[in-house]
Length: 66
Image (cartoon, rainbow, N blue to C red):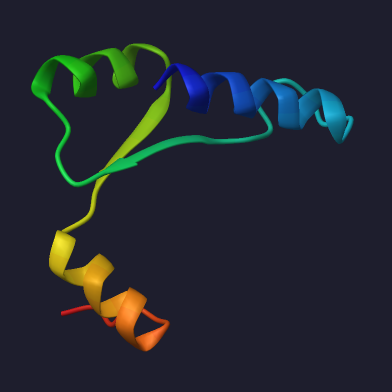
């Protein structure tokens, strides 16, 4: 989560964007409720991705939604 926050602000500065003009994403197989709560506090989008979808993407080069 900290890395997502860091890169959100670095992106804004590097590309001369307005504060709040970018998103922060935390993507993982599983995210604990405590981390999800912290993400909400700091405006980080928490996204859980099924391992099967990642495996399929790695094999096919794309993810197909179920």
